[in-house]
Length: 76
Image (cartoon, rainbow, N blue to C red; front, side, top):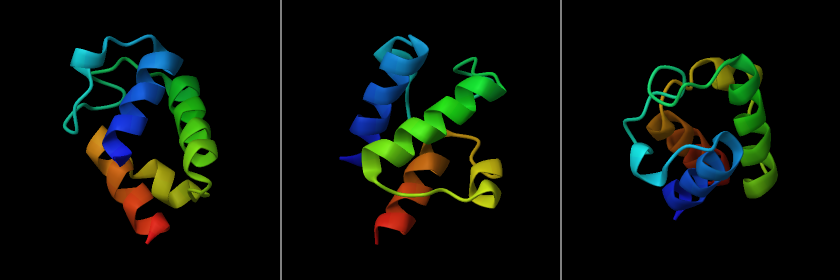
């Protein structure tokens, strides 16, 4: 499942407890990601799912749910 794979990435890359990561989690506000963390997360997702997220799409990703939606769209 896409969410579970993203959750694993967030836990590993950002040292966030798994129970804090949900579809509603805001990447910056709830998970404490700064701009570098967000870029690293996007890069990790691109590698994990073998996709390329455009800068425009990346700018609109605010929550883990947004990220799942972008991946789902790109993998379709």
